[in-house]
Length: 320
Length: 320
Image (cartoon, rainbow over all chains, first blue to last red; front, side, top):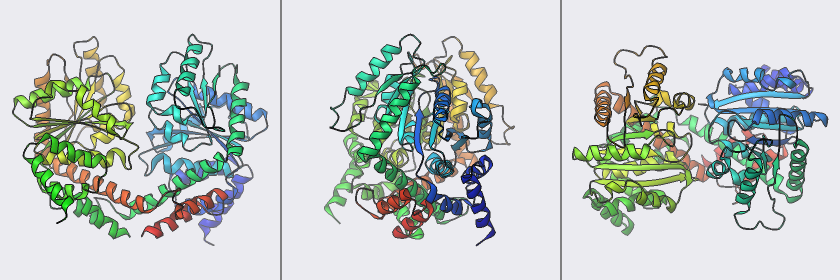
């Protein structure tokens, strides 16, 4: 067994026995696409699959951080270990994201039962689809009972985040015209639980009504299908939090009893395997700069002496 | 020669001799990922590479459509054939986009020298990266001198659109806090020409100033590098249009003299070949539903009996 593998085994053991530092180092392996990542993921695999993954999504300003913090406190009160992965797909993949760890969720900074990690994924090969599932596996295998996945920053990756969670919570706030925005962004389809935060503001009831209307617009759901509830919340004061937690628990029970949990997790694993497989094949195809076959094919297409399909065939043959 | 190929050759000949209907049918082949697409692209390849591709990007509300329409009129006045490809990455890939063709750019609806096409790409395998270059090749080979590529809808694919153009125009409007948004979205780096539209509104000069400041923040550009100008425009009245056109021409000259045109086009061809090659490999990997290897690998990962890397290795081996 190589020294690297031994070190990874130590790291995994430390993470499993509660070391925040070991968890952080394992996620750094993901961020750096380290050669140690493979053995680490191999060592972590048997321990993953326990955590309940809850995605939080919504436009900037709806109070995602406050809601995340309130949920963390609630789950901690149930003595559950909680992980928070804050993903910023609009920021470059770099250490800059670490700053976020320090300024966010500071209420829980000293709680050994809470793991908080920010991750920026822009510009990374495969981006979010590649990095986030691996970071989630680290938190999961480290013993988190619940992991909250939160998007920070702008962008349309809400739908992508939803694809990584067992339960997706869509947050809205009154008077932001969010209903229409959500419909546009395809978020109505992916929300399992809708939460109108800042519900002490004017227009909260109208937003709830609007949302319920939009959610019932489509065809009647099949028997046994999940009907996404709309809950009101004031995350800053905790008002409505019990109802949100009850909705989350109800969805969790439904996931198990309907078989949807297994289906979602299989779909996720499939996405992850595909992302890794395509990443590997992509890396075999080289770049323009290393004067690989790709560069000469691209020149032929620009010159009009080859069409892109024939060029792609040649490239595929070269990695097959 | 097969009958399908003959039909494609006829279609290409008709498109090259000015038939709008033939151009539309060729782009429909792209949208449908038709089996005739390959022979069509092969037949079109020798004729492509003539058109000057100008991408227009900016937030909703900055006046992209009005600016596109003004630019079309200006290029038509120079007796150039103009194509417009309006891409909506946030809408499903379907015939619904066709409606857009009818309601947009109606000023030019009867002009045989103007080709307008909308395209929705969401949900399509490879999406924008796959479909748009092929639609552009059709317009290019059909004899367009200039092609305007415009994003419609919301989303962060501005940067992706920019990667398809020779010249990228970033549109902003006064008082939308767009400077900061643009910086966040990574748009400052991709803009070749910045246009502050609706420049008769309050705050236009401040927006221009803010933008110029942000553009000069980085390191001093190397000798011979392009310095993106910031122009004011009132697209609705045409005020400032001459200056915008002059900036576009200047960038076009710089592209040729600096060698950057060839570099950008080679990079684009490379991206296109890669998208096709990865699409082909992806399709060989099957889906969860067809009970392929992928499905059993995903189940193993969910069960913790395999790690995703080993699973990906097996999948790669199966298509290689």
